[in-house]
Image 1: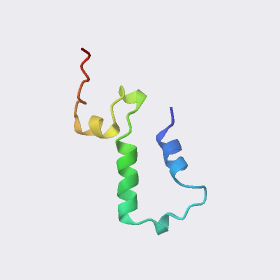
Image 2: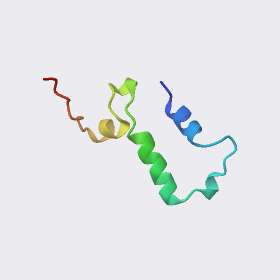
Image 3: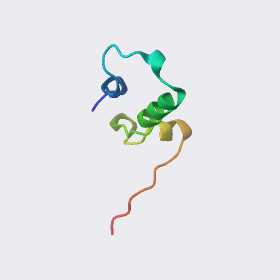
Image 4: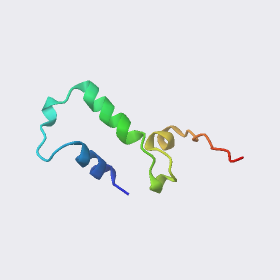
Length: 61
């Protein structure tokens, strides 16, 4: 499993200038990181845990 830091590092090359990022780009990156399921959170996303939202359950027929 990648750590959030690893996910962030894979998005940007080493030495990237973060002063060049727009607000829209920052929002997109935050959305990507906060909506990725994490094993350590029981395969919930950080956003689901923070807001106390239970993910929909897939029913097997």
